[in-house]
Image (tube, rainbow, N blue to C red; front, side, top):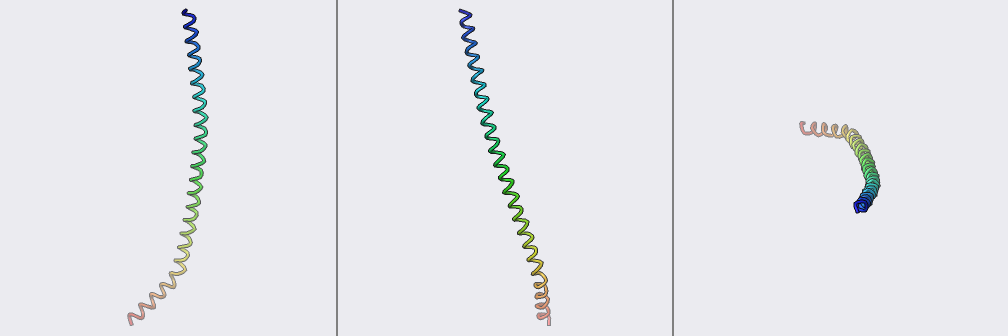
Length: 87
């Protein structure tokens, strides 16, 4: 009788170990899939950030270029207006 109980306990322990092993394998596989998706998402965000920064820098340079092109004319106009008002 004790031998039969030991055999039954051994079978149960083997089933438990098999179940744990299967579950761990499933968990590992799902984690790997999940991690790949996260890496792709982060990479996409980094690419979007770099593109946004490129647009921001180009826009800033364009605005500064326009300001420096307009600035001398604006200063001359202000000087002429001041001369007219002070006379």
